[in-house]
Image 1 (cartoon, rainbow, N blue to C red):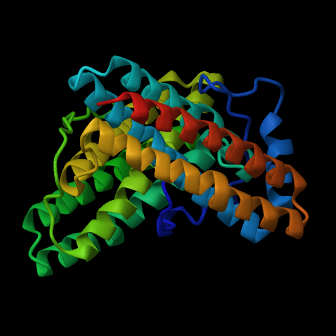
Image 2: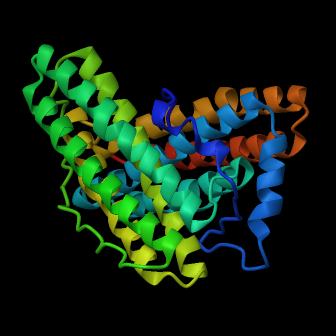
Length: 322
């Protein structure tokens, strides 16, 4: 994954009323109210540690989405082994690193709490973030980005409305959970950025990190809904997650020129993983240790070691790829 800015709408990740363990297959613990103990641990973490966990989740969500696209590009170039490497690493970033951070931060709560969190995030994106990004892109002459940001803002408004309706059903026991949306899947070929302004490029980066994390969170929320027997709500979460990843993230990736040749993608992956292994996560671990958060510090150290192994694997693949 790569270093990035913290997305404003996600500052509330750690203020939920409950949380739970996330396992590699997006399953959640099934013992009685396991989320209460996890949430108590999250409350005990220092604010800086929680902020570093939020940054971690954004980066790991972005890495999962980006590496998945890099794997597809490797397949196009007839590098199947590299494609498998990117996809395997993407799964690790999502199912281990991000989920472990989400558990420490206390992200997943009750169905009602999860819906309220999503409503707040979608409202911010609909009313503030994407409208501002669209206005800035329009002023900077990036009209294609302005159009995409405007379309996504409208989508997020529809997501908010669906989650509001679902919350009413969950809290009252009456009504029907809305049907899940269907993603208009966007193909992401290799190519240069299709925007020119530095501000638009930065906004695309912020948006992609947010969409990548939204996908991961909504899939965790879906797992919680399934655990409670609310399959209609789980389908709503999964459908919305698909839109965030396969339509929003992908559309932004096209404009950002995220995917390049496989060799270029490998170089970016090596640089990003090395930065995490040697600088980002060791720094987070040091801060967590100083703050008295030893469990989080151990998580950051273990993740740094994983990223070092990823960097080595990507470098070896780059050396073999011509």
